[in-house]
Image (cartoon, rainbow, N blue to C red; front, side):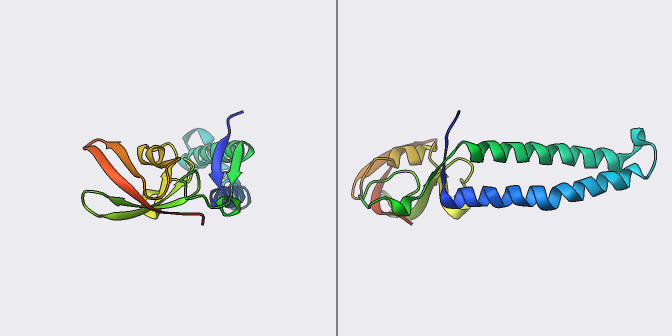
Length: 158
């Protein structure tokens, strides 16, 4: 079975989505299908076909979430002693050596990644370059525009 590394917050978000799909969306779709059936001929009933398609997508998402949660390896970084090293779940402040631009990232699982929120996937090039490094080290990241050097300013367990 494939193990999916996941933060506590990421697991909680998936559990909430799963609860919403099962308790809110599933009954709504069932009601929409029932209403569409009452309209008559199903072969040319667009509402019925749309509701059935939505049902299929919803059920597929439910199965996907259940599979991810059953294979989740939940990592709570707040329980791990501080070492100054970067690993899954830590929040890292880095500075671009050339431009002095500072950025903060949390290294998370693929399902949780959202660059707008400063969460990058553990499989991303920058995360792979940062993992196992310590505060004060300089890392080189291969980007499409070339190599970029970052210095690790601070590692936090939050």
